[in-house]
Amino acid sequence: MRPRKSIIAAVTAALIGSANSALAATPAKQPNANPPVKVTAKQRGKSGKNKVTKTMNTAKKSTSIDSGLKKESTARTPKPEKNKAPLVESYLIEGKLEDGKLAVIEALSQNPKDDSLRFSLGVTQFIQTIERFAQDISYYGLRGTSEEGIQAPFLRIRLKPNQTSHPISYQDFRQIFERLQTGFSQADETLAQITDEKVQLRLRWGLIRLDLNGDGDPSDEEMLWRIYQRITRNDEFGQEDAENFSIKFDRGDVHWLRGYCNLLGSFCQMFLAYDSQQWFESSGHIVFAKVVSPYGFLTHGQSVRKLGGEQIDVTDLIAGIHNIHWEVKDPERLKAALLNLENVVEQSKISWNFIMAETDDDCEWLPNPRQTGVIPNVRVTEDMVKTWGDMMNQSGKVLRGELLVPFWRGERGEYGVNLRRVFLEPRTFDLVTWVQGTAAQPYLEKGHLAKGDAWKNVRDVFGNRYIGFAAWFN
Image 1: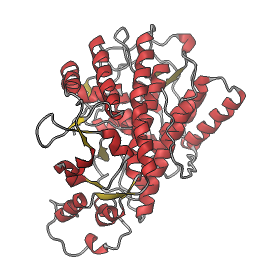
Image 2: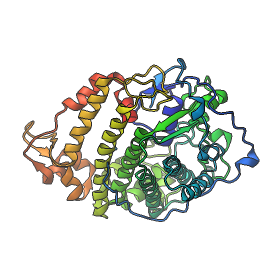
Image 3: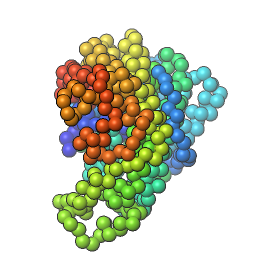
Image 4: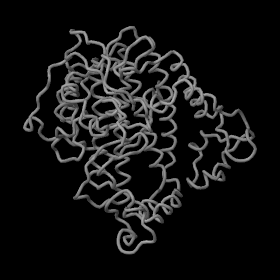
């Protein structure tokens, strides 16, 4: 695997991932903003566990890196008066996320107007959500984690294989996504309460320690900088670099993170809206080691044709595609998913409004054209911001039904798919017939079509790293 990520890009990838991102740099060394934190095994203690109840995201409507560069350049020197570590940082570094969350909640009860504490809480809730997801899939023994870990769009997590995996039923599988959606919703609700336009949160991101396998001991190997090092196979970046590397998140980043909460939450809502039990029970063994299923014969004994050296039959893959024929189970979740996606567009606009108004230049996560970001040799230009805004504007019109998605069959330009109606008037989702085009027939209309120019402009302006920039810009 090629080394492709910066500590932040990789950490973002380790937390939320990116779809074939192509931005990633080894971060530049920074002056020591905070003294190194030495953590012993005894200090780490047990990592708190979230007790999450099943809830449904009502998705309040509101105002929504990889890279491939080498370690060089230097980032902005933090000003001494701004270097006091936030309350939550020591907890994140020790891997005590639940304790950190509770400490911030207690501090907020004493200082309810302190939006920096509220920012800390939202970030911690987001990270906890990813940690819990990693623990879930480790507990149930996700296949294919020995080398590359999870390699999926918007999700890239490195996990060691679980030799004592537990059986997983369809209901267990759904509950994983219910917890994931609930966590993103809670983080978004917390961040939505921030009103201070000058709110800031400075963190040494690479030192954050997670309990990915759920053993209660967030080890040194589960520090984000080490995850980055293993994913990229980049031995140049070490402990000292991580201790000296910090990012100052500000108000624009609040909305950037809210955009991601809504984006990832929408995926969960869409999956949970449908009944996929037959698909899971006939094909779940492709993904998990021990699936509770009436088709136990699929995992042992004779096979039709093995796929390479894998324990998977090629017919299992074919059946997996064929069985993506999902009946609608909860249409309200599709309405919530649509609202999530509309919020992604809105949060992106608000985020860039705040970013473009910034006049400082201090360890910026997402810089404007006048600033220097923490990712060296990656500059944001006026054309990039404008082009991204144009694409998000068109995406918003598609979600509102004002523009139609061009239909891929029949006469070019004659009909389009009303994507809004797909969410509000759901029918059985069949992957094959959607690709073929017949499943789109109920949603075909004549009207103004979305143009491919917006996405083409993104590719032209951002170059061959446009996917990485898209994941970064949100």
